[in-house]
Structures are given as C-alpha cells and as structure tokens.
Amino acid sequence: MSTKPKALRKGARLAVVSPASTPQRALVEKGAAVLRELGYEPVLYPHVFGGGPLYYAGTAEERVSDLHAAFADKSIEGIIAARGGWGTAELLPLLDTELIRANPKVFIGYSDHTSLHTYFQTYCNLNTFYAPMVAADFARDNGVDWPSWCSVFEGASQWSLSTTDGLRVLRPGKATGVLRGGCISILGQSLGTPWAAETGNSILFLEDIGTKPYQWDRILLHLRWAGRLDTVRGIVFGDMKQCVIPEDMQLLEDAIQHSLRDFAGPVAIGLRSGHVSEPNISLPLGVSCMLDCSGEPQLNFLESAVV
Image (cartoon, rainbow, N blue to C red; front, side):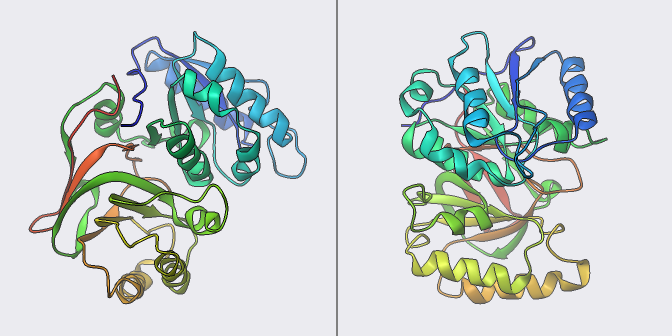
C-alpha cells in the first residue's frame, strides 16, 4: 500500500520549486499571490526563478537541493512545481530515496514532472498529484478546477469525474485499478531505463502537448511492445486540445483506436487535466479508482489520497 501524505490544511506551507525549466518571475509571483489568497503560505525556494545553464532552473544539483530541502523541512506540508518544461529526468539518479520516504509530503506537478511522479511512486512508495502548478495554472485566470482540488487535497474518500469534466467514451466497459500515468512522451522515453513507469493493474492516464496523431500511435505501440499495457485495466486520455486542432481530433481518436485495437479494457478520452487551456483538474496518482464506460463515462475514486 502506498504512503498517503497529509491533507493540505488552510495555512499549510507550500514549497515552490522548479525541478525542470526556468519559469517567468511575474507568473510565479502572480500564482503565489493566488495561493496566499486561498490561505496557503507559499515559500519560494532558492532556485525557483532559474539561472541556467540553458533553459534549466539551475544545475541538476541545485534543483535537486531544493527538492531535498523541501522534503527535509518539517514545517513544509506540500511541494508544488512552478512549471514543467524539460529537465526533471536529470534529477532521478541524484534523489535521496531514504530522505523522501522518511518525510512523505504532497508533491504537485505535471508534464515533465511525470518523471518525479514515477520515481516517488516506485522507489518511495508515495502517492503524488498530477495537478495545477504555480506559474502554469494558478497564474492563469480560471486556471484551476476547484472542485477536484478540494476533493483531492482536503481528503474526500469518494468522488467522481464525468462528462462535465470532459470525459467521453472511446471504448465501453468497466474496470478497477490504481490510477497511474501522466505525460505519454515522458513515460515512453523512460522505457529501458531504471526509472520506467510501473503500469500493472492500473487505470492509466495519458496526456501530452504538441503530440500529433502518428506520434500517439507510435508511443502507444512502443508501450504495447514493451509490455507496459499487458495488465493495464483501463485507459483515460486527456482532452487533447493542446495536441491537435479540432479538425484533426477524429484522426487522433482513430489513431488511438488503431493502436489499441487489441486492448480489451474500457477507454475514455477528454479529461481536462494536465496541458489544458481550461480549468485544470487535479488527479491523485496511486489511489484505487473505477473507470466506468458502460454508459455515461465516470472515473470514480474509491479512497482518499491523503490522511
């Protein structure tokens, strides 16, 4: 059983970090101001505003030092990324597994931070959260889906996502499993490394940005041939609006159906989480859920993600 971090109470101190690319200072400050208005206390860590090299928010050692300091600080109750980009995978061999396991905390981020979600789940036995980031979402007008944020971080034991959250049925059926996944490009690129994602007995959530229909087909085929879909129970795709224009959505869905033609479980698409232009839905990774595509689609969460 995975370790559940503590719920985020009002007044919780949240470490704001940049494990990947450099964010815009103005957006970090705007997002932090929104967190303060919500009653949290954001704490900006030393390398949150970046400094290179290249597009990175500091060297790998500098970025991982912020993560380690946040986990070690007993006054910090949650860790939230400023933005994604690229660079999180560089941190994986530098992470202090024992430190993180000994100090379980809410970790929030998406996109490139799929690498960290996978690491924390596999090596630290820690539930994590594919949820809005400071500069990417809290700084956006209407960038956060509040019902899911509250359900996740305040500890709802049972709640659901449905058609109002974008879900549509691609393939009917019903399945129960542990919610895992994230950005499909990062998951695909992790194959063959020590940090490849575990997908067994899961409801697999997959989303991305700028990924064309043939690329979805290609990565899904790669996951299939690597055996990563063999024991997946069901699949939920993101809303895909950041991948294709509306005129190409049917081609994308057809490419997915083609690549999953031998997959037996239920498949849904359209969930508004991750790379979205609308309010971003928070997802708890590592918890039991049921994907029901036997009628109107629902993703039902069967346990609390926090304690």
